[in-house]
Amino acid sequence: SVRDNRSRFFFPNEWESFIQQIKPEKKLIYETAIQTGGRIEELLNLKPRDFDWTRNNLTLRVTKIKAKKGEKIGAMRTLPVSSQYIRKVKSYINKNNIKDDEFLFKLTKQAVWQMMRRKLKGVVEDDWNFGLHNIRKTHGNWLKALDIDAQEICTRLGHDFNTYLKH
Image 1 (cartoon, rainbow, N blue to C red):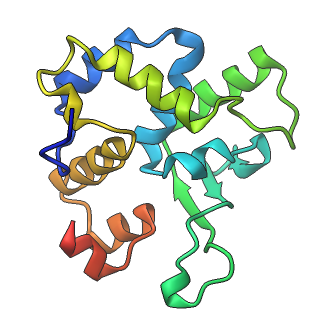
Image 2: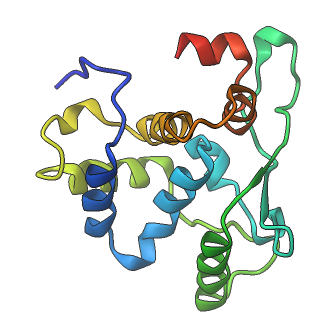
């Protein structure tokens, strides 16, 4: 089936129903997506060293390269995250014995996408309208609903203001 609504995002009750369907050992990738608004490729490149445990920050070191803007490498983004999320990440790292320079998630983009597609069935009525990028849209929309400044939303999503307005 083809998506007919590319701007669809999760409503809070839909997100809660979805995340409850995910096995505990796989939840963190989705929680990281909703906490940061990061692109899946950015999140799959996270390592424990990318976290500032004392300041509750996360640095996305591998980001989208905007070739049209003349970038040769993506611009790193440092994002504040909740202390509750930081505790979950620490626990995940310790439980899985992940070294500081190892990838946090040993998953492929396709595996994360397929798991999402399977778990969305029966959770949202129009599950065909969802992809991994919809979690980013959800993050941005929830920040907007919380009346977060547009510049902050742009920074978190790695967008310029024109892209923000377009979306």
